[in-house]
Amino acid sequence: MSSLLSYKSSVFPTPTPIQKIPDSLDYDGVVNSETLNAHLNLLINFKALEQNFPLMDMRYFLRAQERYILWLKLLEKYSENYEKKDFISIPPIDVCYIWHAHCLSPFKYYEDMLRLYPTLLKLNFPLQKLNDIWNTGSNFVDKKSQKIWEEFTGTPWVLDTSDKSEFTIICPWCNTSNKIKSDSYVKIMKEKSMNQYCANCSVELSADTLSAKRFYDDIVKFQIEQKPIVAGTLLNTRTGEYGPAISLKECSMLFSETNFKILSEPIFEKKIYLKKFH
Figure 1: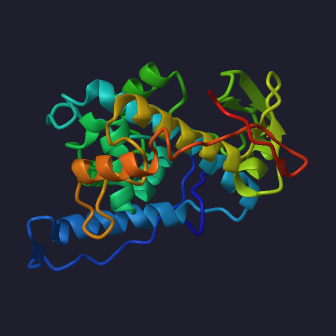
Figure 2: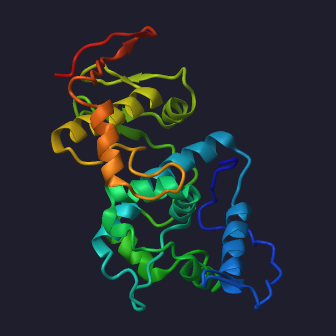
Figure 3: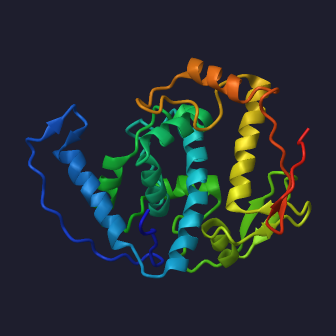
């Protein structure tokens, strides 16, 4: 993502109008003049919200990622009602930006939904809803959606770009909540050289170690359940089709108790100390 979304409180710049796409275009009932105009409008609104403050943008982006997870949990709760015409719910614009970015990697998005939120596979990105609501001049706010969001998440609809409050990292080794200053958290997620250590177990909390622990936990869960659940293994890498039988076979070969021994302990002074998790 070359630039990150941010906006100032509830004040938004006016996007440049776009020329209407000819109505004659239609491809498979999906790509047509209506959806293309809506998508162009979406991108123009995103572009108009950019700012030239990298640290603020990154901090905002990371908070938006956390809010996106809350949105997915909200969708899980309301998944049965989501497609009904009288249930018009859209996410805040920062969440919409992250959701859209996630969808730009269709294989990854499909696999993530298969693994983590299977009930959401039937739900579509609300492109037309967003376009219709945003075109009302309501400053990207839908009152009904705002009410649902704030009641479910306990967080404000508008994400404040000036918010410098601490982030929280829950240590995946000991489950301790670690409060991290916002600038430090940005560096942890952006710079390989920046590390933080758990206040309870002293394990290193970095982008690399957190990612490795999630991968390890996937494999341990696979060994217990013997189901295709390891991220990166569920889809055919060429076609993107879900292949549970092939995934199960390959994971059984790669991650059997005999062949697989991940030994992990905190990384101290740039040295990796290996220890069995068992």
